[in-house]
Image 1 (spheres, helix red, strand yellow):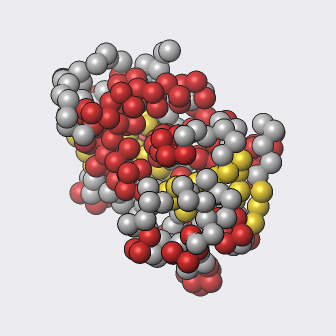
Image 2: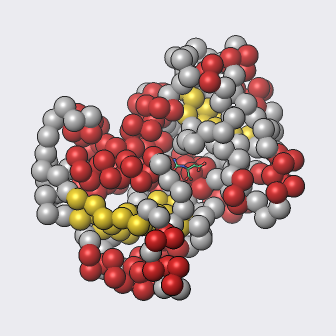
Image 3: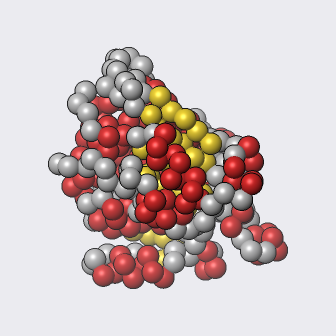
Length: 309
Ligand code: NCD
């Protein structure tokens, strides 16, 4: 399967077969991700991490992934210290970094930024989140975690809840879950429901997601509950945010009627959507999910840059 040089801007840039291949390789890479086994396969290669929006997990897990593979990384982690403040355009920044690295990871507040970067870069560009657009690598690690925790994806009842309008992880994941034949339910306050475009895309591929605003009702027969943060920074008006803040909260009482092996996932960071009392239940899988970012990103780097273990 040939991945070399592919840009990963939208989850639809990869086929279902390719995503499965990334996950299979990621599974093999778990002992390398945890440091139990060693490799230097990316020795001499440079990954450029360009983060124009805050990040903890995505940036650090890309860095950890590259270092675990024996490669190095360069980064813009504080855009206020880069030439962006002098008025440099994203296109020019990308043209420079193209010459300094072998692959570019970009997080940017504007939807479409990664697509633009891919146009100006001869190296693979990986979208690490573009505004309220997409976040494809988060999606692969989400799918990996679902497969690991629920024993498969097809036919599983997966409930996506929270800010489905502005949440880029929810957009990419919904599309991918459609490709994998999951049984989809979207729970959100009506103003934060999944964009119509995403729903019609799913319908075109034969998936009809169930829409609801009642979390308690949907949780009882769910296999996976994927909860997201209300994306405060994307609201044009703080008053609108205040109306929906705190809409959903997962606590022990909500889980009383849930399936015993319900897996609770969250891309993190959480604000108040999951009560800390849930953290030590068997259902809490979000920290495992965050770790899974390392083997999944190692697999992707290996496939995009080419190299055998
Ligand atoms: C998410 C993001 O940046 O889109 N975080 C992440 O990458 N794990 C989710 C969020 O910020 O709510």
